[in-house]
Length: 95
Image 1 (cartoon, one colour):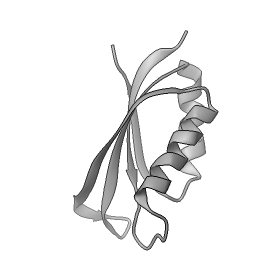
Image 2 (cartoon, helix red, strand yellow):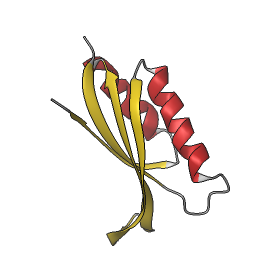
Image 3 (cartoon, rainbow, N blue to C red):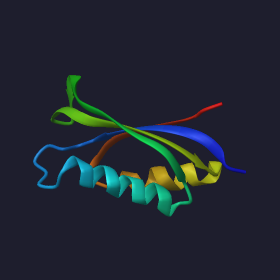
């Protein structure tokens, strides 16, 4: 049974040639590849970090709202860990 989730993903745009739109659509395709049904993709913009995390001063925040199986969240996390464009990711279930 699919449940509603919200995922905040911080993209690393430092030194990247591709546009933010391309990065956002790539992550969207990876989510859909694991059976997630995207409801909304909200680009929150670039924000600076309070401290330099791993030599990065800030990132581009994107909020994904989607429906997915609970078991697919683990698979999505593992897949996006391998994506160099994804700096941070956090998912929570929406009631």
